[in-house]
Amino acid sequence: MCKIAGLRAEALPLPNGGSISPYAKRTAYSLSMHSQTDMPMTSTSPPLPDDSARDLARLQGVWEQVRMEADGVVEPPDEHGGPGALTTIAGTQFSVRSLDGELLLAGSFVIDASTRPRSITWIDAIGEDQGKLLPASYVLDEDRFEFIAGEADGPRAIEFRTTPGQTMRTFVRHRQAPATPPRSRLDDL
Image (tube, rainbow, N blue to C red):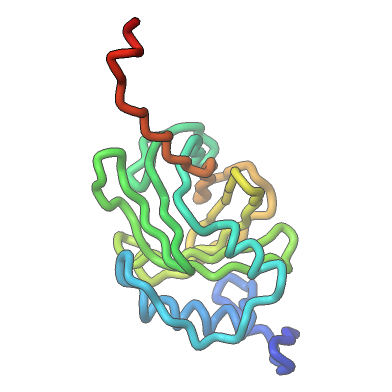
């Protein structure tokens, strides 16, 4: 049973035997309808609970991928990221770009910090998983973000260790290096 904005509603069953709250399903559908790359989106969904709103605010910005694990293998070849790839989160939209600026992945997400572990559902706008709900769990602090995601028809991971069909990515907040002031002739004296 889910209670959001004073409404009570039953969780909706998923094909894998799990369930998704009516809020998450409505939000995921709304997001998938607006999941063009790097486009702002206006949401008519109810406000997020406090923990989810706080985590969503903390996620905003640019994150650098520093680690990836898939199917139990650390740092396998990675077509959607890789060391140094930058993930930009703006609202509930994300885009992943390589070091040379190539768009590798984009889409939207639904966050729910009330679950343990906290959950995030990714909805890719491009690629082989386009439009699918990809269940994931995450941990987040001010400068570190990590998630473990499963396949669209699989269960949400609850341990931060991959098994077949799961991918885990670790990010640190990307900070622009301060601009170097121009050198003066006095610097050489």
